[in-house]
Image 1 (cartoon, rainbow, N blue to C red):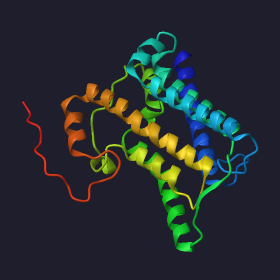
Image 2 (cartoon, one colour; image 1 turned 180 degrees about the horizontal axis):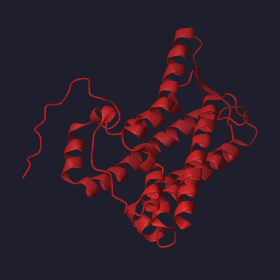
Image 3 (cartoon, rainbow, N blue to C red; image 1 turned 135 degrees about the vertical axis):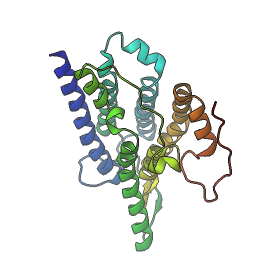
Length: 251
């Protein structure tokens, strides 16, 4: 019975993510949902700033700490290893929902693009960013990323096996196309408000910090393969002129 429960739990966390992701797109874009990133300020500036920074800080800490190997070793003493990643997804979902609920618009306009071509370009980049995030996840292993693979292997009575190191599709040109998608999604808007700027700047700063910890873990897991990959492949945007490199020696 426990195997069925873990699979059902992982599946529920994944479905919850799909809803949160869809809401996040509308929340940032400012359409279709009751709470959005932008809007007139209704709280004192100091309060709105403190709440918003706190919401992003809590999300960033959770997202980084729960992904570290030392935390996983401790956490799996209380949570079944097959449900560990799904629990990470669940907590992330809950913190993003908290952000939707408690976010305080701060008013003010940083830029507003009225030219029709400029607006089309920015909305196209916005859509591209939100599409790139799930697309990039399927270029590695979407189901491992969201804990479904771990639960399914446990259901079949098989031990968890880390994914082999592969570079497919966009990962041949950039190391983190998923993060590239998030950055595009956060910054591409024809109407940039103060609260939107704060949101985009803080989450972009978080990405630049978090990626260093993530890559340290990847180098520990994949060794020289990832070392060589990180030396020859840029992080977020492909090179216009490819760098000439020598492949690592194989013993």
